[in-house]
Length: 240
Length: 208
Image 1 (cartoon, one colour):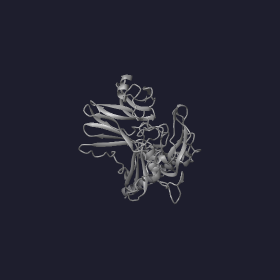
Image 2 (tube, chains in turn orange, purple):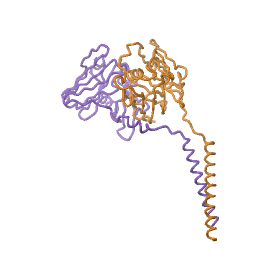
Image 3 (cartoon, rainbow over the protein chains, first blue to last red):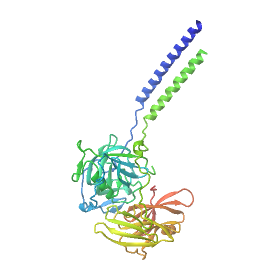
Image 4 (cartoon, each protein chain N blue to C red):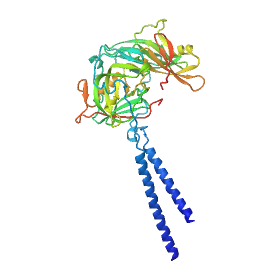
């Protein structure tokens, strides 16, 4: 009888300790959760000077550009630049459009449903990393001016062509991250930008005419009826 | 004995609390995605599609960034010939050809054209060694009367401390990026070739 009593006491003691222990662990967890909040990645502007100020379209055919102390003549914006009239995926079945950017390989893949419509080299951020995550295009501009950097790194580039700005909850619209054509370098496949995803002009043009919202003039906003194409950016760029 | 039992229970509770705390701290650290999730990873092609070569003739081409120029390579097994075409006028001409033999392979890199299409560069395998050749898109000779500049030979004459591992593309219309590695050690550097002066400059950062 005494043995039974002892074993019952022992079991009760174990359960009591388990409950008290669990309560202590949960309390420590809740306290830690509140005292050590989740850290968000702080993302800066893609173009440190034009960021937030120049997110509107601007065509400047008589302007001159500067990139890393060198003068760069910008492309003249006219129909002449619309070399390719082919719309990506025109002969393929319709499907959800999605762009994937692989920073490790410096590649961009565009899908229409399960069909790939574009696969090309890009240049992501070198002086300022390109953010990763899932994004949505919110505005498309035929051209705009991008300015940033300082000293030998200063750049002022008018007529940056075929700009597709994207955003998410962490990377706001005002930070100015985009896919766009680049006319000042041809080093695609290697990080070269200040955060944006640089592409060949012809690749950017084809993507610009394919992505949603459907292009309507020099400035096209995404709407509830015509939301922007999704972009997924992942991986770690070489050298970072 | 009861006291030891109590102490061991307290120790387990303490360890569990510490583990819980560190787990929460780790979860609250920023962890950017390092790869696309499985559903989409399978969609990423692993190789760039290459044209299936015919038994006799292989063709490849690259366009300039603005789409205005196209450089096409035709390899018929005995000769590598390069045709440059203006896509707006559809006028093209053979700008360079090389008999195969000592040259076992030639190719057109993705970034072949300079940003304003003033120059383009090719890659060739000569006697087992990789060489990079720069041409004027206009077809004109360089100031020294040469049809093209052999970047590999020029760099070898510039320094013996490094060898070229790759020529990646253009930093500007007249500045070609060259990745080099030290002959001794693991050093890697990016140099730039300024075409007008034919001088090499260390870029100061490495473009991987």
